[in-house]
Amino acid sequence: MKKYILSILLTLFLGATYAQRGGERYDPEKLKAAKVAYITTRLDLNANQAEKFWPIYNEFNDKREAMIREMAELNNRRDIQLSEEEAKVRITKKFEIQQKLLNEEKLFVDKVSKVISYNQIFLLNGLSRDFARYIYQRQRKDRQ
Image 1 (cartoon, rainbow, N blue to C red):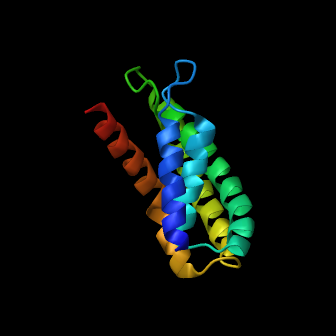
Image 2: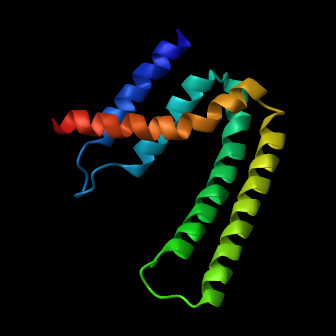
């Protein structure tokens, strides 16, 4: 029953997300709420788990996104000619960021394993990607 209610809420949030608002294609707050509903439903989190899970997840996700942006900046402008030394520095920096990302993920798993099961953590791994895919498919469907 809980899954059905959350699915309905998710659908309502997603429907509202696509409403035009000031020329934007989506409302970031509504999209975030839809993602929370999607992940909460898929992980089958109870209220107590969700209350403890989301602050840990949000902190990790913010750090993760910052590191991904940093790596993207290193890869920007690949068309310019780099000296061998500059290319080496960028590659080394990329490896450092990837190691830092791995370390952060290990810390996240350690923290969140006190709140949810390892099976739920394992499922979480692909849920953000699944949510993005779901949004993309809905957008394509709405355009047609």
